[in-house]
Length: 189
Image (tube, rainbow, N blue to C red; front, side):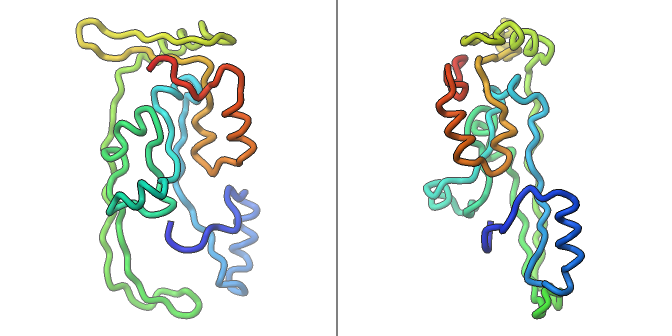
């Protein structure tokens, strides 16, 4: 992220409308809409998919294309295929007036989307294995012996990776990191 940190995140539609309504009187404030990962099956696929988080200082310093605030794969598939999934950022160089109105555009380089990735998980089998481990600690891995494809990979207990799709509060992290049976541990791997 380039520029100052946001004053607020995860605004409701009402809060966004309030900012927009006062936009002419306060042009220094701007509402920025950003895409966010949504892990539809939550904890059921948490250890397979992993999650994304802000790039560390070491990652930013060791890369020519990462900037502070950029999101990268932290573990699971998100980490293993990060470079392929992330794509390439676009760029735009503009001149604006003191009211932040566009005066002139000097450069526009469109972003390139990352690659699509198709996993071999059998969601029905994955969910059945997850149900078996409810309230238990353990793991299960099922492979197709003909191809080696991973059909099931369950590690229990698990966590909801959607927690990491937004800025995680310290109290949430502490609760997760100190939870009984360590839900962050991938027992299958």
